[in-house]
Amino acid sequence: MVKCVEEAVRCRQEGNIKYKRKQFEVALKFYNESIRYCQFGDCNYFYAMGNKSALLFETKQYKQSKDIIDFMHSVESFSGLFGREKKFTEKLDKRLCCCDEQLKLLDEQRNCVKEPTAAEVGLFKYLPDPFINCGLKKKNLSSFGGSVVTSVYLKPNETL
Image (cartoon, rainbow, N blue to C red):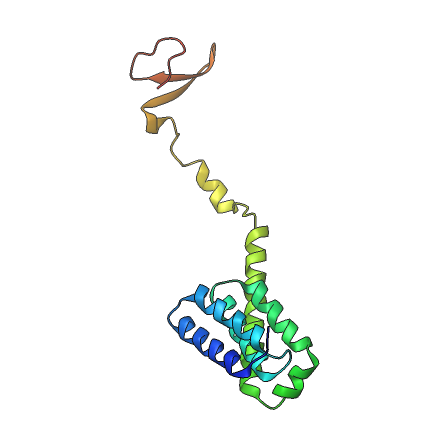
C-alpha cells in the first residue's frame, strides 16, 4: 500500500467520528486503514495506534489495548516524537494502568472460588427442607431408614 499522510489523517478523523457515535466496528476499520497509510514510526502512526488502543479499551479488550501501548513504548521513535508532549503520553500511561487493573480483576474473578463463611454455613441448618417445597415430608423410620411421606397416593416407581 502506498503511504499517504493525508489519507492516513482522513481515515483517523473518520474513525474518531464513528468512535464518538459508538460505532466501534466501523471506527476500528478506519483506524486500521489509517495505520496502513502511515509511515511506520511517524506521529500519525502513533496517533492512529493510540486511537485504536482507546477503542479496544472502551470495548473491554484490555489485553489488546495494553499490547498496543506496550508496543508503542518499545518503538525507539516514540519517545523522540512524544517525549515533550505529555498530554498524549499521560493518556496512554493512564490507560495502560487501567488495563493492568482490569486484567488483574478479571484474573482474580476467574481464579476465585468462594468458600462459604462460618456464618453462611451456620445458616444452612435453618433453611427449610427442600422436600417441603414439593408438598413432601421427610421422616426417618428406624425400621426402614429414610422415607418420604406424600400427601398424595403414589404407585410404586411413580414420581411427582
